[in-house]
Amino acid sequence: MKTVLLLNPPARRVQLRDLYCSITSKGNYLWPPIDLLVLSGNLKDRFELAVVDAVAERLSPRAALARVAAAQPFAVISMTGSASWPEDEDFLAQVKGRLGCLIAVCGDLCVDPDPWFLRDHPWLDALIADFTTPEINAWLEAEGKSGRPFAGIRHRFNGGIVEGWAAGGVGGGRTLSYPPPRHDLFPLRSYRLPFVRDYPVTSILTNYACPFGCTYCIQANAVLGHRHRPVENVIEELRVIRDLGVRELYFRDPLFESRPADALRLCRALAADFDFSWACNCRADTLTDELAAAMKEAGCRCIAFGFETVDTETLRRHEKPLTVEQFRGAIALCRRHGIEVAGYFILGLPGEHFETGLKTIDFAVQSGIDYASFAVPSPDHGTRLRREVVADRKIEAGFRIFDRSRSGVSFSEWLGTEDLNRLLRIAVTRFYFRPSYVLKALGRARGLRQGFELLRAGWAVVRSWLGDLGRPAS
Image (cartoon, rainbow, N blue to C red; front, top):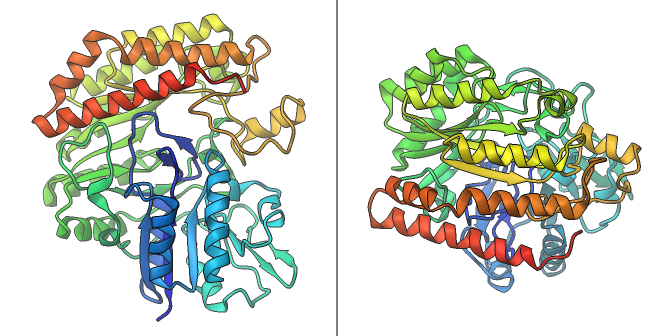
């Protein structure tokens, strides 16, 4: 069989590129790219597979290129992203020049309605808009010589671009199934997450995209189409993971409880037949007491919520009509069941003032949550927010390469770009540099190894923060 190489390309900083997101990790945290894992499941029966995660293995471009070449692949499928494309472009062009193999990429740049990414880079052979598509096998077997559409894939043929977008979403249905991925090919001991106590760790998916319509979130993109995996399909993968000796999981679902009955069934199976510890993403208004209790019994250690902002008018404007009372209720629910809480925050959404940003930071500090991730708004490809700010001429349509985790461009009529970056620095300083937080984090450590990991992650945040102080507003 021919070899397909799945690649997470090298980067100077730790890059998080999967699930249509692209940011620089501030705390050196990194998880197995779910896109490549799912692809490995769909490809494993028809191709030899090789995996190079140059970020996890800390490979230099030269070492990564040698590893890729040694595998002698006829095709490379690579992660990429808006935060890392300049580096990715240089490396993938070298791969193409040296090996002459097919090169397909997946990531946030691939879901822009305009296929500029393929059009502007003639050495690229395909964009994978839907990494769950089983049609990836047929496209690879055609070796770039077929002009028919392949669902979820845009590819080059005879000097043109063949669109594989299906009307109503590339998914073509409400359910999603795929064979258990080849977790064994990934460097599972090289990934790091703040809530993990025992390595190795891996990622898993129970549903795809999101049924809600938040304007700023790529997971609300109607093109992707929200789909769920049958519980039996997930359990089949869990058995494979267990047999590898892995006990820590990161559920990469945008919303773990998007189908509450399925989530309950899965939790009961996890409690009865497995011994995993895990974390996931939930929503403050959809997590119930019954489900939280079942999640804890099933091994859930941490739940992350997208709080975004405490300004209810801003939340309504962006199609997330939640309240601070609901946020506090979700935190209290997790506390009652002994589950840690992480919060995602977006500082400076359109319509916000500097003062509301400060109130959001106050909430993050005072709420007692265990972890926080602060970002600024970004015009992510395929989102409604991007369409709006382009239409309002707040950015040019060609503004495509950016890193929301480090600095941003203001889309609020009440905030300048420097205000936005100042808010980000204040948030990181106030949340992570509190003596009480440092002591609490170290108190959670189980043994010297995890204590060292927490200190190392904290130092990465400090270095990133100090570096950003000297960055000009972008």
